[in-house]
Image 1 (cartoon, rainbow, N blue to C red):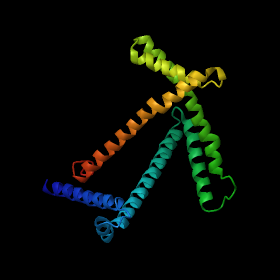
Image 2: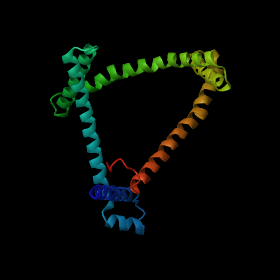
Image 3: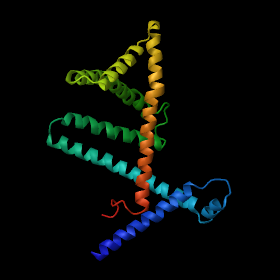
Image 4: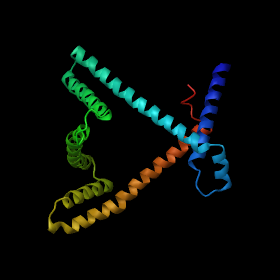
Length: 223
């Protein structure tokens, strides 16, 4: 029990030191103040860049491990001929094909312009995302219908009206200039305010999590 607590304290100390060094390296400016000179003399900027590079490499390895795990899981489904194994086969072939193309382009074997991976991204990925974005229209309309069919409230009526205004304004007709102006106002004021509020919430949550890590309150790295 003692050694477990000692290990947890040691881990917390490492996290605290790395966090303080990284934070100190990031706040260094070019104003030549006493704090900047002290942090630069202690090589905080260099150490901060090193830690960030290590974090980036770790995230890249985690992403690679996730891709490998995905391929292994679907290979097992293909081998056992479970339901949907044809889709798994398409996924595995697509994944391996893109990885091979990226490796060949990286090593200079494929030098065609535009790159094959870029063509795949623009013709396949963008097309699929556009199709899914088009389905959002039907999802919103169906969701508004379900909400109003259950219970009519002011909030749901406002949501329905905003949805109808945006959909009508999307029609490129000169007679709908009024609706297009209302749509532009909705996107510029309420929607923009909501998006900024969400971003502020994410920023505050990130700061809180960072402070918890620095003071040793986060238990995730102690297990």
